[in-house]
Length: 109
Image (cartoon, rainbow, N blue to C red; front, top):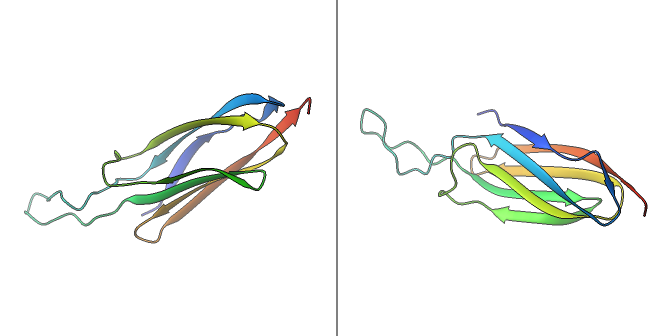
């Protein structure tokens, strides 16, 4: 399965400003409990971990469980204090990995 994500990262912020990152990833998030029309169990296939690094620091990490809906939407806030790269990473239990990112330019530091 091919993963893809929409990511919204602000390009610029003022020092000390609270910014929000939003992301929507395309993934079925199959729990392993559902059955198909032939009565066969649909194999488990979920995203198990999400993390975000900003300017070399881990600012968010989440362990995802089967209760998360298909195509998970995540949003979180943090204080922008330095200019630097942002890296978002999703990992799945089928070995899939998706990495997306951007850069935030902080002014007035």
